Length: 403
Image 1: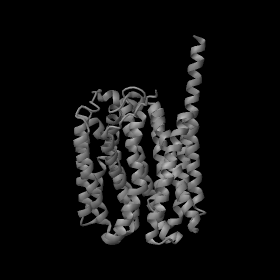
Image 2: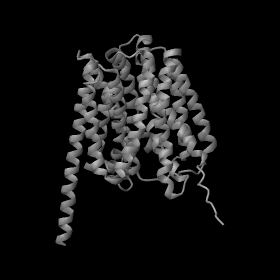
Image 3: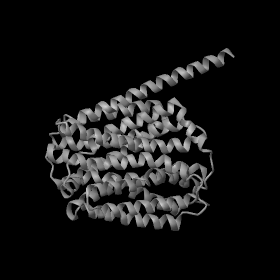
Image 4: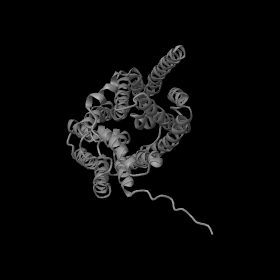
């Protein structure tokens, strides 16, 4: 007689978190496929439109640590519902924005939900499953972010092309309403109960040099990515020669590459975290540098956009792991939130740097080599960090042997 054991049922609350992650991921990056429409409609330059990405990213950079500390003693479910309300209202404000300044303010408002949602959501996700399934729960929630890049961003670009860019933000606001309702109805009230930690213990993590170096790697690594990807629509249309309608399909290739890179980076980091950290940053720099030679070939550009997705997101797991490994103890929550903020500071820096290069007269084609140089700088900091850590480990072993 054979007995079968049913696979553990996935809590519906996890899917509610995934919907929220999908909406947030879509609203962050969809503007990249709408730059030309927004610039023309509001009467601003492509560079100014690109700053809407920087504004969002800076909002995440400031909001993630501040809101993480401010809401540390509140019920996790209430925090998540509140964040999704902020997200929804922010997207409605984007859709209604009469001018550039209002749109920028609306983007910043929307961004405040980003970092804390992922930080708190991860805590809630792990509380919903047995200990041996915590990693799977987190990955399911973050799957919403990857699906957003694969489907949400191209769909938003398509919608903006046919119905106007405001229609895209209305659609994302609807996702926000659905996510808010799903979290309110499906996430248990006691999920991820807050464990108060004195804020001084949390903030003390910033005194650790290796944590600061790890955050710097994250900033520079993603600054390189966004220095190019922010302007991917005008690059594809004005330099490579794609039609506006083809941009969505090329962005889909980036999304596929991102999912593959995310899985690859996680597996490599599980096996050899230091080698994965250095290897993925080096690979990203090579892809960005190589894109310079692919700009005038449609086939080559599609390949390199896909490779950019792989290279960019292969770095995520090694970078996140580096921060967490060096922030053991009470500071892990803040450190994790700060690393999300660091990704977005890199986004802001990259969008600004790419715009500065274009505005200086170097043109769109100059963004990939500049981006590669920024990522090489991040790789240099990673090499320095690893060298310092090995020296520290050797000194610790020497002291232990003397004793």
